[in-house]
Image (cartoon, rainbow, N blue to C red):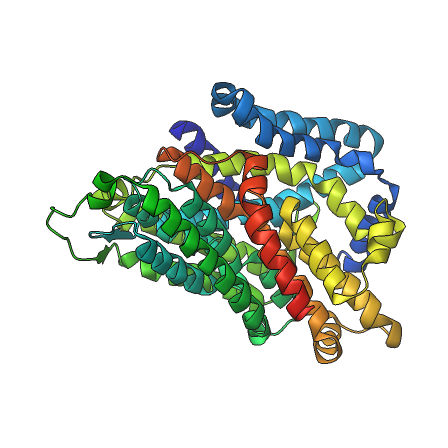
Length: 490
């Protein structure tokens, strides 16, 4: 498994760093590329998304009915669904199949995996030591800290930094699955609402003209839903804690208390380097290069290189015993890398159809989205099952088309975004909140969700199945909270 991961990631590193060597300046017209994507979305039928539905069902069903098979062959299952999409896609639309596959791999998947890997590696080099006992008050405090950090070091960074301390604090508790579920809700998703650093959809908005600090307008929404969920969590955790045996509650009371201490702080430098690399790619635009026929922004290549370097420096400078103390392994990131490779490829038809808007197979849905509450739920529900970054961008462009462009001659993206913010800010708030908040609805709604689940299972915490998570946690806790958000804000 380790050799497979090292070979896989070595390929990603070499491919990413080699891009500039094979690249040449491109003058390909961006609008023409956009038209091509729209035409593809108009041509594809809704059933072309069957492989995407298949990989989602595989993630949901195989761990239940064939856990041993899934554990050893999940990469092959992902490859099966990817090929099931690509082969007929290539037969009927060869140019589009190659172009769209390369496009999503180069511009989405590789940067996605590099960002996750760097944050996973760097956060895994920071160890919180000391006597932490998983009482309801301690668990609540850790969730509050993680929720606050998520907007500044990203949901992935915050989740990877705190998931292991949370697991260790609750190691001797029998009832702890709900702790991980609420950790996914708050730390891996909702906490990343306040800055473009927090969650990929907001970063995309920043790249397309939304001011960096505008997302602070979502603070009332985030504070409202976070408070509701924290209260729910404290009541639920207190209930389960009362059910624990006296032996579990007393565990560690007779041991010498070790003060809380954070080691591996050199990784804070590398974490800041990652944040700096991401910020740089948002404000520095030197142009594009052509990689295998795909226009790639130079700043994104530089960002990828910075992130890889930060991760490698973390591996070099972090002491082995710190990672051992964190029970650090590559298995979670390997599982995410394989499964999301299949997800990103099979998602191509779904995203193309969405981008086609009222000219695609989901025209009735796109026509129904008019008011802020529609944008909140449409963006959110699709973000629960599709990648929330392109879903955000789709509805962001839809809002510009509905509320800005009909009133003006063509504007730049930044001008259109500023007009939308000035005259219809609630629409953009709804899109932003829907994309970030509802990424918590499923394990695949946001990348850290699956990593947290994998790390929890690696530590012998029994997590619910894909649908079990939705039925037991998302519907009763999240959806109830989101209905209240809709009533109060949209």
